[in-house]
Length: 266
Image (cartoon, rainbow, N blue to C red; front, side, top):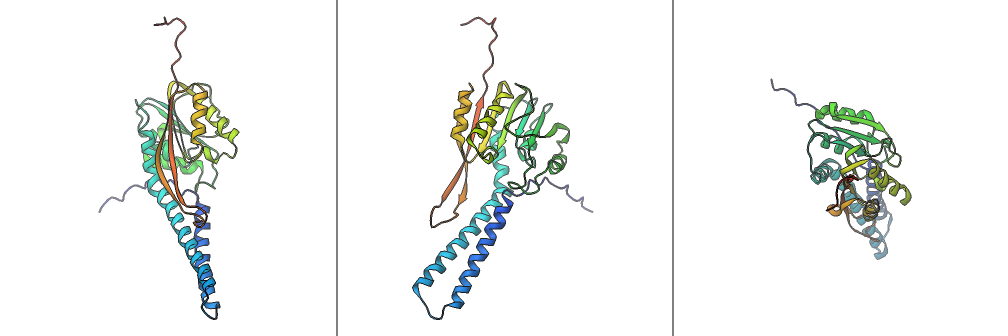
């Protein structure tokens, strides 16, 4: 008999409540069109315009819900690997993933280690990710075979519970934009810089505020600070007002080595 395949990690659905609301909005718009069609006693151009607008909203919401599902199950795994490819790995790094969620980036990084360890921190809010809890992250690490190289802690990105210069690599994916204030986001970026060792690398992925992250990192003295387009996301919500693509950006940087006071100048 064939051996059943081992369960694979499940990294959840991003924006689960948003998807439900979009599907309800789509269904409601279609229901409204059907109600208008049955209610009108004779054809009228104004009713026709309303029905067309409602159909556009219905299709638009359905497309956006499908885009969120596609991103959750396909694209975010690709983006995690592409982000990690920006780091020059040795295999012995001590890694921090800020806002690790159910562990996609954390586990993908741990798979690149030999003797290193990966630490994930989060506040485990379910609004951004379905089933977002530490237990789900541990289970995914176990399924991926990297549980012995992973640690998980409860922590806010703005107040990381680690000493200065603790980590060789600090990562974060689609987390910092959830912090509501600019001051809070800047504090989180400064915390990321604070816990990074000299010579260490930062790799961030986000959809908003990335230019501000670049400014803060440069103000903190980091070098090789770069911002690159990473991918896109279909954004057709409210098509009568705005439509287009939301672009993801990767932000990478390196903390310069501290030169010894005894090192002669060249």
